[in-house]
Length: 240
Image (cartoon, rainbow, N blue to C red):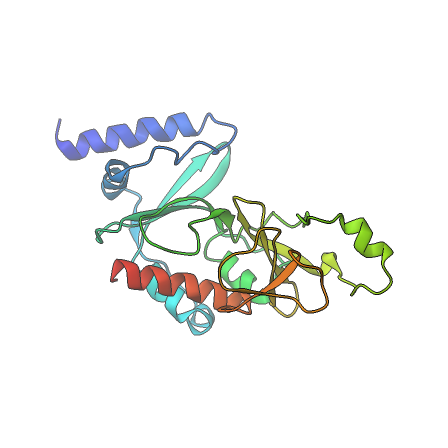
């Protein structure tokens, strides 16, 4: 049996095992470059994405990044996913993304455009210094409910007539950090805010709110800027 045949056999066995699982919490816990090499031999792997003109105009840097990716569809727990990897660089990295979706009118229009290409990053392994580093997940489509992680109970804000009003229903979560901080996106404007009780990095407190509650992101005020910033970090670090 050739090395390529052995790789394909191992991948087929892994795919069969994944198809029997209920979730993917563990999937990339121990992933190393060997698994990325296995993806190179997968028959269904394709190079790059077919992107619309509107996507390329809105996300030029993300388009450039995705053009350079290898994409492998997999099925696990009865759901469809894409394994998106960049294998040529010494800084190899891989994302596990949900399959593209079109019935996502609850998202901001720019996010809908991205969702038609990939359904958000559920798991990832990276050796680059990017904004994903401290996240559990990013850009998922089903994570809508905002759970404020404030030092002060949100009920106390509602009872204070002098506090600004905030309509949580107008926002949804686009990134969730390991410490519970959430980056949220306005469904209509695409404005980004961060809910954070342990602030660090380049963020600025939202005026008229108590400390350690709402922040603006200094380097990306909108959803489009966040996505393009992520792509820029990858393109620079991996020298693609």
